[in-house]
Length: 237
Image 1 (cartoon, one colour):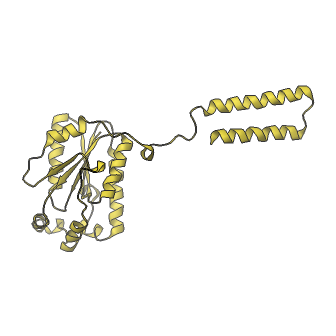
Image 2 (cartoon, one colour):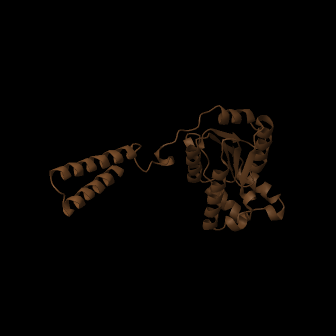
Image 3 (cartoon, helix red, strand yellow):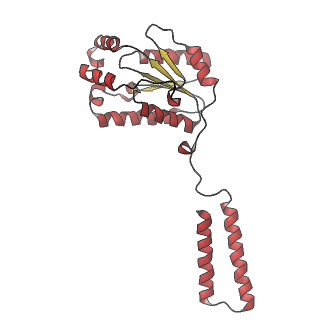
């Protein structure tokens, strides 16, 4: 089922919008909606976002959790910063492999607005100002011209969430087709067993004909076996 990727500055209203979407889809589609995010992993933001390796590990954990929850029945909302375009591309590859649609909801605010919202939070929920500023500076805004950022819904703080348009993008649009990079490749050709049986029969018939002419030597038997193994190996490759 579809994946909704939230995106925006820290304290830009992403979680509030994710909850609005959850309520709407559970009431309108009667489907189960999973919100996956920093909160669900118990992330201590000021510790994680101060360490690039810890942040990388959290992103990997979020992606793995999304992959586990994507199925044919439920809707998944990834509620995190998702500020790196390379990471959004990885999520796009994930949904191509799962063959399900997705969309991006961009909660657009100014640096000043988000910073004010951050300082108005309880102290335990605030970003340290230096970490907040660093995340804003590193933010890579989504671009609808990129296939991994499309369809893109940009929402300002006072906008009404376009839930019907988002629903249409998820349920009235075909999933992106898989390609070689997102599909598992077969280990051998589809007719491998047929070819193996045919080669084996040919070798056995050759040995039988040789027996009728003269008694085969040990070298003849070993040579036939080696030929069979070589041909089988070539067919498997």
